[in-house]
Amino acid sequence: MKQPVKTTRSKPANQQTNTFLVLALIIIAFFTGYLFFKVQRLEKNMNTAVPQQQQTGSGQQQPTAKVNIKNVDLKGEPYIGDPNAQVVMAYWLDYQCPFCKKFETDALPTLIEKYVRTGKLKIVFKDFQFLGPDSQTAGLAEEAVWELSPQSFEAWNKAMYEKQDDENAGWGNKADIIALTRTIPGIDADNVSTLMDQKKDIYQKELDEDKAEGGNKFGVTGTPGFVIGDQSISGAQPTSVFTQLIDSMLQKK
Amino acid sequence: MSTMSVMKLSLMEVFKKPSYVILSLVVFAAVLLIAIWLPNLYFVSHTITTNEMAFPQKLNLLIASLGALDTNFTFESKYVTIIASFLAAVNVSLLVYYFKKRVRLQKEAGGSIGGVLLGFLGVGCASCGSVVLSSVFGVTATAGFLGRFPFHGLEFAVVGIVFILLSIILLTKKIQEEIYCKV
Image (cartoon, rainbow over all chains, first blue to last red; front, side):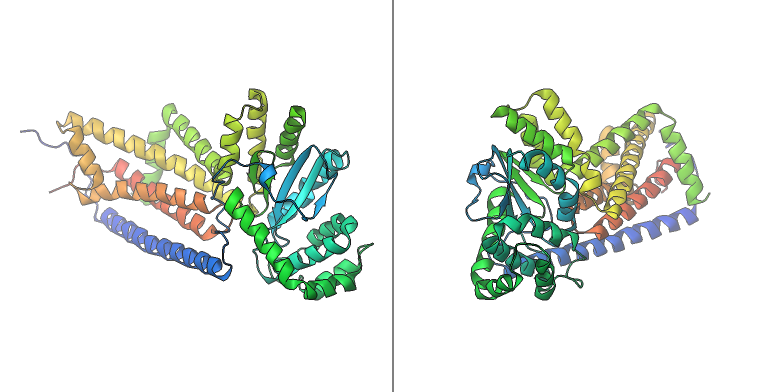
């Protein structure tokens, strides 16, 4: 009869360590389960609070159908660039999102310089204000600024991101935004403030529709999110990703 | 022997073989790619399949998108992702080594492959089975943390790293231990 070959090492201490490690695994498994449950519940609550909205923050949802910029509702949306530019990019944003700020400070200046100023690219700003009250307020202000002074929108948008702080932490209420708006030439800040109150429901509906459109049709689950031509991009990508994509689309046309 | 010494011995035993170094590098690259590309699966698949771009253009675009590790990750999440990818790579190599070692030794001792697999699943021996289970935990934790990045959920990443570390500790111990349960 064959006997098992034993490389004998009998170690009670090792067994104790094993027991400890297995126990640690079980405890951590419970902890993970708790965290997962909590995140799921928070996301569920978020969806309940904002009907018809999709899951936000996971960044995993992908477009369910073929993406095409022609299917994005661009009517009445803030934009920069030639209205008849060869390439159109829709950009879903949140004014409190640090990755949007990253895009605005890293990639956007190059895109403006190289493509927007030369009439090749139109960038349409779509709302995905999901990070709390300050985001909603900023979204309302954005709608009012666009309605009153579209020529100053680019400067106002830039100033908003330069002023960005942590989420709902200090700067960003209506008074702050109106004060900042006063510093931008060409915008009547008092009128912006008045419109934010008078047309609050209309603006809010537009914000919600933008967000729902991004999530339901184009797989936008976080910010920044982009649709360029037939491509969908999530997150603050390096500048060269945008330039290569735009160049390839310009070559096509 | 202390846990650290056991780990050192096992890691040296495994990684003195170039094939396991290569396996680790491949797994590390694969996990990192998944972490970077997971939020952009549509972008990646569309870039690969589109007829509108030449192959060099596609390649350049995909390579450029790897820069998202800098632009689309916070400082903390970037390093947590790199560390977790590295540990996952080590974990997989240890698991493969342990599996192969055990199959070889059991064959020499007249055991069947089926018995080895059952042992791995923990049917024959709870002690041996726990190692595999913990390794699976490690992989699952890796997947879990990847799914949460680069947005919220740094907690998951930290828990994931702890899981993988525990898995590595258990595997390195098992590699140095006897392969049969004492009756």
